Amino acid sequence: MPLIDPSRYQSPFWLRGGHAQTLLPRLVRRVSGPGVTRERIATPDDDFLDVDWTARKSNRLAILSHGLEGCSRSVYVRGMMRALASRGWDCLAWNFRGCSGEINRQLRFYHSGVTDDLDLVVRHALKAHPANHIALIGFSLGGNVTLKFLGENPSNVARKVRAAVAISVPCHLNSSARKLAEPGNRIYMRYFLNGLAQKVELKARQFPRKLDLHGLHQMRTFAEFDEQITAPLHGFSSAEDYWTRSSSKQFLPAIRIPTLLLNARNDPFLTPECFPETEARQSAIFHLEAPESGGHVGFSDGLLLKRCWSEERAVGFLNAVIAGTN
Image (cartoon, rainbow, N blue to C red; front, top):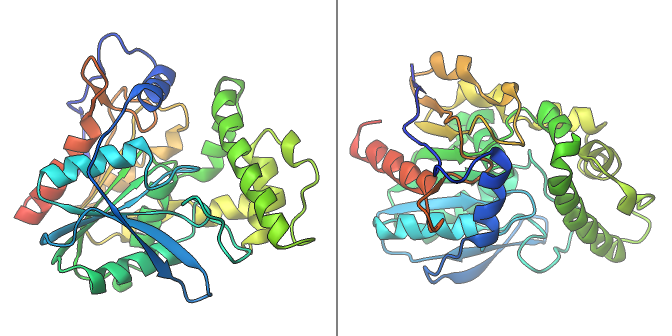
């Protein structure tokens, strides 16, 4: 019955509301170190993935997947890497296609349900790193990809992958997309759609007449963007089809390794459907922890916003799994 209730996390008394807990850490927090080395991995379709390593010497390796329009150098990724490195973990933070600062070669993009690239990164890590204990950590979109990867073909997950943590995950994409379309979330939609539109325009220059750019900069919702761009580009019949097939919630019961999902109740991106309490109650290894506060990939801890509770919680969970307890 791994439904962790109540959670021990409480946001700082002065940082009130899901929007403040989402935006301020992103705008104010600065993370120095750890140092990384970039590597380019070739993909089977003559493309590439750029990944950042901290080191290749520990017996424990964490593979980190960023969120929508993030990258391996996003502050929340670097914060988690620093927390892991301080506890003896090596890290590999990878970039979804188009997110490393260089546009990819193929027409395909990235989206919430694409797991073949994560599989490639894991298989590369197994060959390139000496670790016997590998953990997966995903944030938001990257968390959905991580959970889907673990549950869609659990027998294909390498035995060295021992545990996973997913943070602020819209695991029910249909309702989350509608939630983000609400007027109160306009600031997030504008940020995401601006970044996505820029990537689409670059891709259209590579592949003339392959993408429908009509009204691209007038789009205001994921329903519009995913219907016109994401779905046809990646083999889905519609935005609804994409959301339904890519939502990780349906794959949670099949996960076979200890996994922790951290979703804040006041996350402005999430709906009640994104809190899989039934799945957690019925599982011996899938853990859901849902603090009342924390925002989206927030979970700040301390007056200066230098620390994130989610980082210590994730590292503590992974270490406990490796030590043989949950």
